[in-house]
Image (cartoon, rainbow, N blue to C red):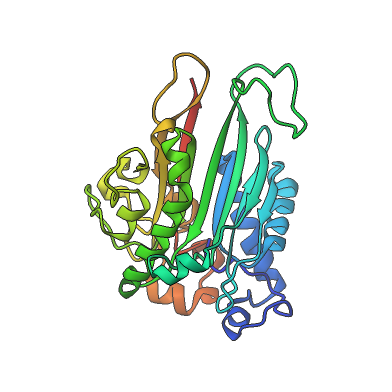
Length: 318
């Protein structure tokens, strides 16, 4: 999404957040319902979003999905630490997916003093459970499948990194922190996905190990046990652009456990990935300067929903 803010600016505090609020109720209703329609065309089990004002606007979005698209989603969000933009990240999910927890992670004082890391002010960790087999015979006291053979548990880190080419040194420190949070789980063979707006300048088929994206993938460490695989590289190169600028800013990184089928039990296995420009572009791609400087002057039928384009990854039960 892009500046997914409703028309009420009384709950915004920064001048930028007030400026980016949707100008009117009618225009907010158009934006909300148009995004709901785009989601409804795909009906994903889990949706990860960035650049949202709050959990409340996601709730408004779920109401539109229910009312207009007849699809029932629940929203997840925690207020971010970005007090300049006031942007948050969040999730939507639908049955039969369950959510076990959502959380935000922190740095210790020692980590801050090391200068190796930089705060991820906009991130959210969701732990999801997806049924892949017959129902379990029972649940433990936490409501978790006792057999552990009938569900797949996936940890998803949704993040939004610092923007602009000159901020890559900060992004490397941000992705170093993100990788630290998930490295042990990856090494244990757990299902991990790290996705979102990386604002990376990386392109092509080979990722530089010391780049922001390379660090996010774990390519900067000596071990390959903690590596993530960039699914976006499986999109044909001419179709990888996820942004109006033509850059490949948005990525989905997964642990190898989600690429390999376990023949001994049902599990989730990666199947396909697409950059769905058709879900965001309406009547032809917007002219960049017009989109960014005169967005609400563009006729509704020609107004793109966002300057970022959705990336849809599909996993099958095998």
